[in-house]
Image (tube, rainbow, N blue to C red):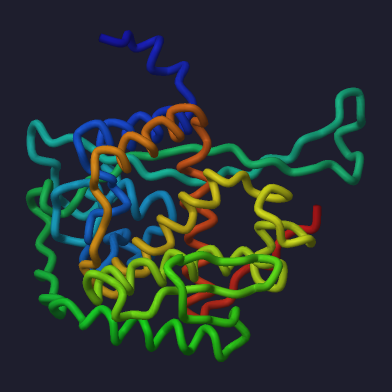
Length: 295
């Protein structure tokens, strides 16, 4: 058992990675868990959690979308039931970095971000919070029709080209083109929709969009291949989850082992991929996102 001192020396990246690895080793890819279309949110501000926090809170067994800090629960006159365990929520704290030896008032200092976390509890873990029950969410939307509609809108609004034919699904950054087998070649409509979303996720990294591949539109000039693949995986799962869709999701032992090895080798991978995937989801769903910072 790890000592308290050992736990305190772990970075937030390591803590988050350990949680994801525990799920993978238990036979579940946490980003492949079909979420309710009502995503997790803070129970006081109603602000939705995003990115990595969607995964972390989606790993829990609770159906209520509302989460609270211990202080918020106390201020609302409630308590946490005895024996309940908290869940992790991450955030970035931006700090000003002053060059060594420079005066405190020196201009041009650079800001850097540090990953931090706080703890929250779901409403179902609390007592004494007299809040109204949430309305029942709509049942699953027809996956192929809904996904195809959104993809078509994305393509028309300046997305990549889409070409059907052949036996390979891929995205070519230099051509800005998605190649897909014909829908009838897939085992199911859900398999088609899941594969299409994955390739659309890659296309959001083009230099004309989020710029993950750099100006030359080559994966290896920007994000590493493994990180980009995980970003597309998370994008597909996040879009499906936001729509309440239960797509055909890969849970094979080989698939889980592949990602466990990759994430174990790079403790920052899952956090980076989740952040990149959230930006991709925002772009795909038509929301404004910050322009990529030039290298």
